[in-house]
Amino acid sequence: MRRVSVFGATGSIGVATIELLQSQGGAEAFGIVALTGGRNTDLLARQARALKAEVAVTAHEECLEDLRAALAGSGIEAAAGPAALAEAADRPADWTMSAIVGAAGLVPGFRALAHGTTLALANKESLVTAGPLLLAEAAKHGARILPVDSEHSGIFQALVGEDMAAVERIVITASGGAFRDWPMERLAQATVAEASTHPNWAMGQRITIDSASMFNKALEVIETREFFGIDPDRIEVLVHPESLVHALVGFADGALMAHLGPPDMRHAIGYALNWPARAQLPVARLDLAQIGRLSFSAPDPERYPALRLAREVMAAGGLAGAAFNAAKEAALDAFIAGRVGFTEMAAVVEDTLERLAGEGGLGIPLADLDNVVEMDRLARIRAGEVIAARSGR
Ligand code: NAD
Ligand code: MG
Image (cartoon, rainbow, N blue to C red):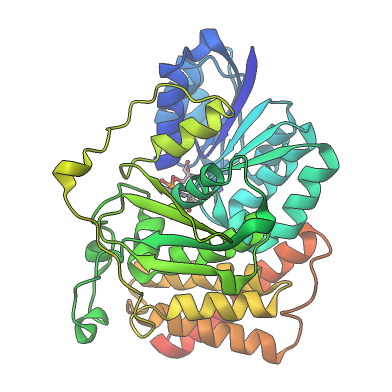
């Protein structure tokens, strides 16, 4: 029986993962080790009971009593806090889903690699902040990382049986987000509610806002560079409003292999769950005759400064990815809290990176996770200063 853990089980990716595990046999087919969540302890407890998990972990110490109460009589252990999350990752599992949002997902995913098994990686922030460390850790233990971002799963699938040496370029698509067709002047006024609605995908709030600002695509360009080891100048972004072509791989002979599918993360999750086999999955089948046409355009650099910042971050290397992600998370928090406007998020990130570069140390090579965690902390402090200066508070 395959032993499985799901980090971030109560989120958008987590819930879809639990649903797939249930549709593929649930507790009879999988030995569920750890499920983790945040404040939604009722949902976490229901998932843990349904799948007969060994342990359920909430990220927040103050939620432990609620979780315990919700698990009463089930025999399932309850735990709380970042250390408990890391300990849960130390419990051996054959397949671990990393679907916590943000840099908080880095340590549990990293620790799970020590089992030398499979890490299904939705948490793109892990690769953005600590890509080389993650890949080295996987290699050290003979573990496999399978991408669970729709674009990266698509690239991975287009590369089956291919030689990376023959890859000329990788193209990832972007819907253009909620404000694709808005006039530029209106963007500064965009509200949190408006930014939290995606035209095609149903996702967690943070990644949805990041899609509107294109920070999500910026992270994904870095994710592509880290995961596939391809030069930044061979990675392209294409605006594709229909979100049906997820990625394309261009080869030396001019062939361009595209991955198509409906905007439904159950495909990428299910592919990682069943890899290298393919299982029947509950996703809609595309009817291209009915869809009729697909459209593509180049992203407007003025509308989406996040894409330029991603290029600068890749050029800097080292700890720049950790700084970029942390500054982005802080800017997003500030936008959600109403402290900065929508278009100010990119300015906050850029100013934060400039300050950190001025202090030296952005391009320092990654030595270990402690460096990354320290840069994450420092970048959030600097971003906080930039935000305070801008918002006059
Ligand atoms: P979400 O906000 O819906 O869920 C996040 C999960 O992480 C929840 O279980 C939450 O309780 C937990 N969590 C939040 N903060 C935490 C913390 N500080 N410590 C521990 N746990 C915490 O997010 P999501 O949309 O499911 O995205 C999860 C990850 O997958 C992100 O990295 C995102 O970029 C990536 N991803 C998501 C999608 C999607 O369709 N939702 C697609 C591609 C990639
Ligand atoms: Mg994606």
